Image 1 (tube, each protein chain N blue to C red):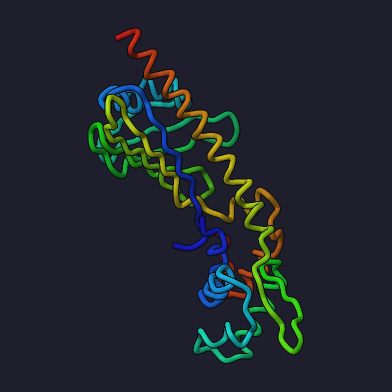
Image 2 (image 1 turned 90 degrees about the vertical axis):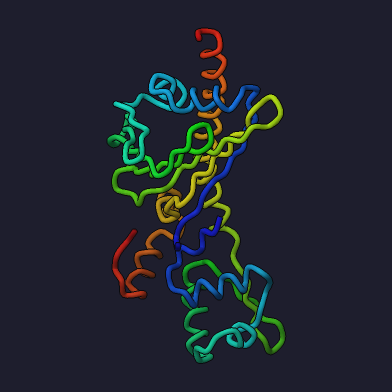
Length: 134
Length: 103
């Protein structure tokens, strides 16, 4: 996979995996901890839309779903390649460790945003002869 | 993070990986490829022109190394993602407590 990068965060919550999972996946709860969302359907093949102030809704589609253990979403911002957001829970003593992994973030978006190699990527694409900017 | 993979051409990507390990001469880099030495030089020129790789003279040799600046800037951008999720995971903690009170 080329041109992508990611971030990973780990948190410990003083709550059982069952409680963390409920807060993570309940439609009303998602609206409170994540962002305003439309209808939520977390069955395989389902998903939800995240409303944003600026340019259009972000789409989250379920890739993997294992109750109290794993939620993996295709995370699609309009006009960008989809990235993947994965929440993984594991019991730890009386609490729960949540590992969040946001991967396959299109690095070119960042390079454009930061003006890194501005114009250079376009030239590089031309050199490579594919002309397609991802 | 492997931001430099954004440079889609496989030989250049491999060159960047070699230089991520340490500074190397063009000959040393070329020894890792079947591509001709002039071919490797062309790739190095492209990488230099794009501000990814630096060169310095060392006697008869020219030594190439990675320019760390673009990577640092990309990491600053990624920091926004870290910050976003850090805030959201704080909010999740609040929500877990809230559900405890109300359920």
